Image (cartoon, one colour):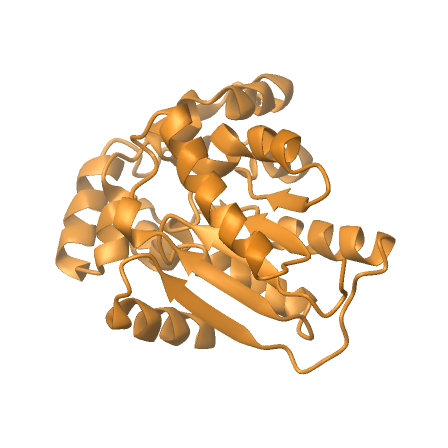
Amino acid sequence: MNKKGKIGVFDSGIGGVTVLREMIKVLPEENYSYYSDSKNNPYGDKTTEEVQILCNKIVQNFIKKDCKAIVIACNTASSKAVEFLRRKYPEMIFVAIEPAYKMIHDYAYDKETLVMATKGTIQSERFNVLLKKYDNHKTFLLPCVGLADKIEKGNRKEIKECLQELLKDYKGRVENVVLGCTHYPLVQEEIQEILGPVQFFNGAFSLAKRLKNVLAEKQLLNHGEGQIEFEDSQGLEEKQIRFFELLKKR
């Protein structure tokens, strides 16, 4: 593989920008190609087979672009498709996001914890293996149906109304919040307004460090200017504008 090759990053929309932010902090000299699949958003209510088919098409496009590594910046896609993709493309480097539940075990084991994720992630075998291994027995699982879609659309009023309904039973009850969808860090402030002073956990920084270690091990680290390109499956210009606005907030 070419060390100057791009790193492909994809999500069901622009939520994966929260992962890319951390990747750029750790690997600022790499070239990135980000794919937002807004045409098929959200992934959370799709079957495993549907998610695998969508991910496979995206991966094929990244391979055509001569990407040296692919980052799955979508918890649902990670839980439902990463093993399928690794079997299908054994020569490709795949690094996948996952809910940062292990961090609760490591840093805040004795505290009441709320896991916010899509229904698909919470029901996935991958997440349940993680939960069983690190369960602190003080954990609430909250499938946030429709939240990622509302964040993707960006209507602040609808987002706040959705969060109020989802979180009404957890005010003052939890101290930790695991953000198990890459869209959710984009509304972290709004979540905190409802729940109060909670500590947030997400897997983006750990993923970025893991990616750097893998590239270093394979001698694929780039030393250049670091370019970023964006593509949306619907070709929506407003997605590109919002993507780069969010990226600049890192």
